[in-house]
Image 1 (cartoon, rainbow, N blue to C red):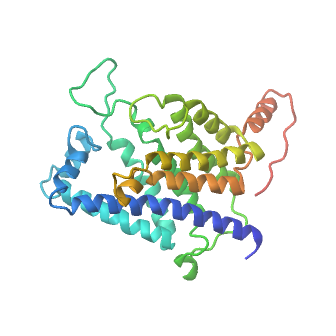
Image 2 (tube, rainbow, N blue to C red):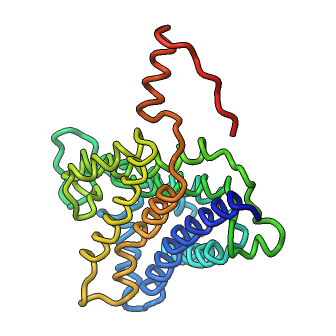
Image 3 (tube, rainbow, N blue to C red):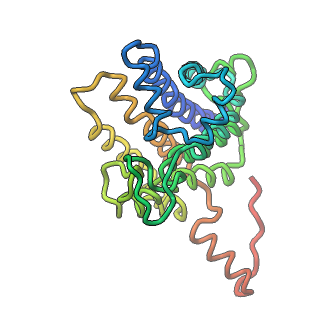
Length: 303
């Protein structure tokens, strides 16, 4: 394995671990409540009640047949979440799982109940911000899944041992880096510009800092991009420390920051590999000049 292959294989490994932890922690947390006779009712209500995560349309679609129950649905989904997370960490069937989750993560956006009527006041505390803003981290995770799907399982994986996890020596990182930095940048842009609204993650960090990080992730390149990627890792570490509570158990503490493990992993990958030059600020200026006839076009670099 040459140097480039090793870099991309390690990038896939980092993304795999970060994403896998999200689902291992989430699955363990949900199952610990769903399998407890004293806590399962509250857990189901947390998802299906008037302040829950699943809107009426999805509930009618899933449970109107009288066969599937909310408890069975949540328990089955949480079990799959746990085992698929373990599989990602171990590097087993990574591409099929990454492709599945790349699409599945969007269902959290569609199923979230929100109040979208201007000036309306509901009688219970619920989600009032746009679903895409509230679930922006899941949209980022979806982008990461598609990057992982293209990279493969990478280093230290069972798929590699089975001869199915190899990473090309020269994957098109201009495209994959663009997807990764845009996916990660969106979370920070939303937190930076809309973090004051209900249920939108702001990572216990000043919004201006988040906005700057997000803008640099999307439009920066080279040293500036890597500085923003390093800032992502620091913000995630800071947020995890802020969320830690001695009054909570280990699983509860980890569940409060599970997505942040994946965001930190994405930051580490961009810090190591960069994010390419496509659609950076300089690239956009160059393309604009070409369109206006102010600059002759440059040949595309083959990757």
